Length: 290
Image (tube, rainbow, N blue to C red; front, side, top):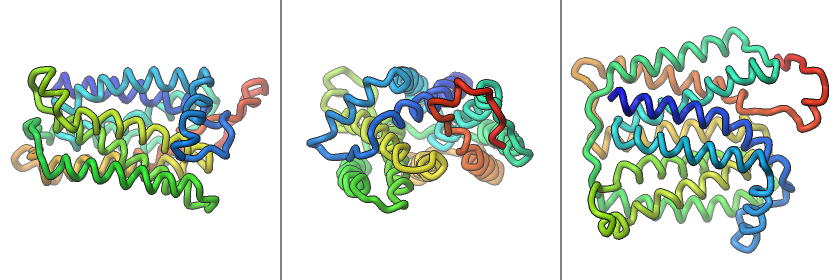
């Protein structure tokens, strides 16, 4: 339990730093980009030419390594809620590096996330066994196809809601990463290569990463990130408890639910600290945005 929770919190630190870099890099790419197979290579190439985006990619990959450990050792509801602490990291960095000020409700959100994670850690029981689940695997594959198709349609839309839709689809993609990680069966390299979830995991992550970048281009960071955080936290938690056998300590169901709700609400309040200043602003004296 301690090792898994440490891995989740370590991943949260890396993800919190990467969020700022990803937003900076994404916004330097022309906003006409779409999730279109004919343009996807050019879009990804443009992103990779941005040093900030490359830094975000490296940190996200390192963070995922730690997150993967957490997903294998912890119930999904605790592993995913632990990643919500990345928003606390982003918010605290913003106060130090960008002269931002946390309002009273945002400080309450920071405390709420920390208290919620503490309640979840105390309430958590054993994680369900990592094992193949044919029905869930088929559902993952169908879900990936649907996410890609809907993402392609949303990326072509000029409607204001496209940002939220792309963020929501990115959240479902990251949920697919968490579920795929739990479905991977321990075994030989040959068994791993034959496992469908060995492929749904990286595809889910890559698709979610691109969709979130597209969402960041099109609208406010808050509108892009709020549905992503909600879906990537709630979906795996529900699947873990209802399908994969994640457990809660005897008599601690109310504590686990309260912890999960506190963490989720606190994370959603802190979404605005995923935002970054305009490229020209560092050259000017920093002032508070609050």
